[in-house]
Image (cartoon, rainbow, N blue to C red; front, side, top):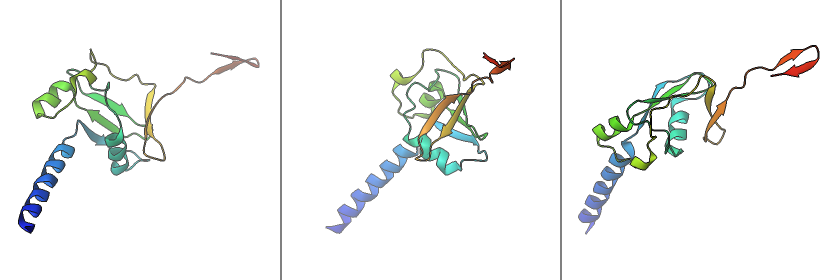
Length: 127
């Protein structure tokens, strides 16, 4: 009686590892603020729908210098990874230099924009 249960458990574990082991992103560089595990945890918990380009990889740059590559849909399909095609962008997009990503204390991925410094001219603030 134990043999079928153990066998089924082993099969289920193998399937779970295979399906969760397939990632559509890779950490290219680890910066000074976040560990690789923090980056992976935040990305695995994030909804990446809308961040997959059709044919070009998409780079995420973090506030500490870390970079992550999100695979293109073309690459995802070639790898045989299951991904909802309705989550793919219509055209390839790359972030502007002013876009910076970070990870909150509770491992939530955050996207922000760096605003240019404001100029002060004779006491008045001007954009």
